[in-house]
Length: 287
Image: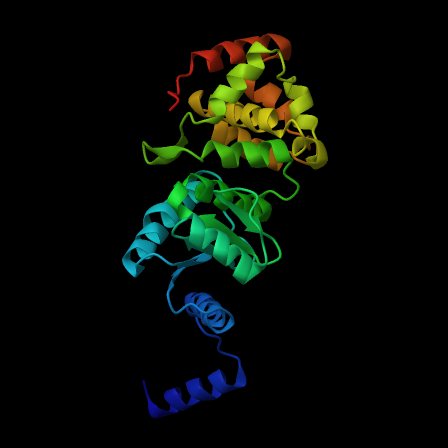
């Protein structure tokens, strides 16, 4: 490059006509955010790992925090984006991984002023953070990772599908290069509800607003939504259902009509009996 060309490059850069490469801008935003966390909190005993679209902060040994960022968070993000999501969350979200219940309870209170209502972990919209007791395993973490991606890619997603898909991956593995949900502890509750004939119709489930979905019967609603997603997964149509539901959300905001079409079922009462028989045959050993 000639002297004149170099001089012109610097003049353009100083004038703002040449912008940093998008990747460099992207990385610098995360690094700046991580630096801000270190100023805001006493992180002398924490490792901080940038794993876009998250910043991971943990009080285990640094190698363990990096391993969790790579083997759980990146693993899940890559596979969720492969099948479902194209856009990252619009804001940086912190993932706090506390090494045990004592650390989780103490830091939730001292850092965020919270008294956790769950031993596993939760999302704080105020602090834009996932706050986790990682000693309980990575299932809740993967569950919570789904939600910010759903908000970014499917605005207005009804609670049954938002929670159904998220809870599907509370227990998961890789199958043929894709993320795949496994039976988990919610199965026993659902089987009990089936026995008591306490499982609502799918029209009812998909019509629930947030207040009712998260109300006193949320255990049944969560488990029904999860295992409807599990059924769709096992029949090979879950990914297709997500994309068609999202693309048709203005005409079908609950997803019910799309569900009927994807299933090829005109009689949803008959399908519910078929689905319940399928669920009762699923095995998940307790204890």
